[in-house]
Image (cartoon, rainbow over all chains, first blue to last red):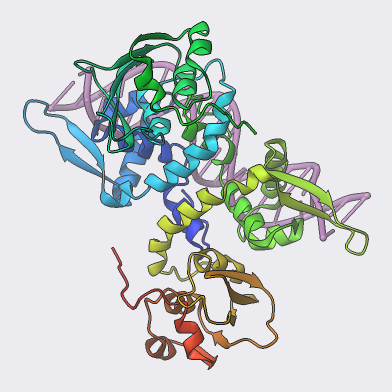
Length: 214
Length: 214
DNA sequence: CAGCATCCGCTTTGATACTG
DNA sequence: CAGTATCAAAGCGGATGCTG
């Protein structure tokens, strides 16, 4: 990207990560950890493959991403965030909070990947951290997702849980609506949500029944 | 900007503010409040005038900026942030923190405006909030800047103070280095800082004598 | 198949000139 | 002051081809 040539912290940051696609590439590596080229390409639907290669070089030069060779059985090149790249977490978080309000109006032809849900989910909290930790399996989008509590905080990662407290299936916005407490379980079921297991474990994550749209 | 077409909060945010120059325009309106077209143009050195006009239309459509007619004596069109635009504050803050570390290596030909200092300064705190508030006058860049404390927090605004506790003159990075406590007053004086008035009032804002560069 | 590089048409940007 | 008009250059998206 062409530099803004301004002696200002925001401009200096945008000189590095202000290019189209760049912050979304950081999002992918932040959410999924080390990725192969093909995984990155799949997590960034719409990007041209030459742009992905170009940007990876740029980010490597900027010391935000580093290239590592995976151990023998895999034998592929992996890309991962450097500590400096991981420091962009607060930027992704702030953008995610601001952009979250736009998600209320879904657009019909948008692509979706299950691991993108990890961003809004990591902002939730467990309302009863003193009780035993819970694990919820979510089936939406391309891959299954596990949501689990640990000391009051809530994390999400790709995978299949052994004995989840509950299993949710349905469209992503319905699932997020339920987890954020903006949609009651009963209403969500009418809009395509299917629930197995303990409804109480789900309610432990719901912040409050009041939504506050702008 | 062409949409990313992804059902993800970060991508949705970047669909709106991911264009080149857009976040810097928000920075200007955030730091200076309502601005005339010419003021914006001056605070965004390097932007092409047609781009500024285009982006202002886009931001108005996105309900981030609103156009207001100034009262008779001024008789100009003013641009200001809507509440939704003001909500981008945390995004600017996160980018500013991340980009702040890049400021350690200043680039020779970068433009500078005094009000840009308000971002790093607003992250400082008054270490002795129980004592009487202080006011420091800074002369650097294009316009004079007032730094003042209020209940422990520190704010900066353009203007000339009546009876400041101290007056600082010198290059912007030296002044920021001193205020952030990464540069001792004595060392700063050797590098071009001129100080009048109470050095103690300046030390009240310095967080700690240890810098922590990466 | 993973990991690019090349080519090509289109859009966006930047520099400058001009106008009510 | 507050923009619009014009045009060349750069960037982007899509398709395709090449290499281990």
